[in-house]
Length: 115
Image (cartoon, rainbow, N blue to C red; front, side, top):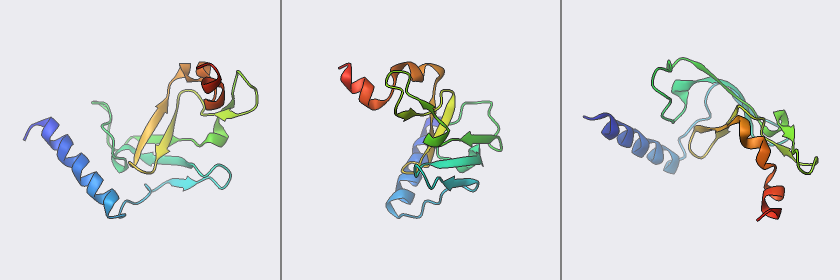
């Protein structure tokens, strides 16, 4: 079986888990009582994502919530995710990464104003 076939099969299994509501929040992550996002630390192998080659599946991945973020540099009101941080996506049991330049775009409200 090729690598892409294995990844596709793994993705299909993850989708089936989601449909069956049997997906568990990875050990080490807790829901923030303020913003309702997850935060904490978990092993890479506990997530459903294609981590870059060379990363140990036992590597600890840090996840931050919106409360750990920064104030939007454009409106100075709304919080945005901290640059160079990871956020947990419960629907896919994976992470999203906020790159260093994400703060330059501002919050969703400020981005919508500029359209």
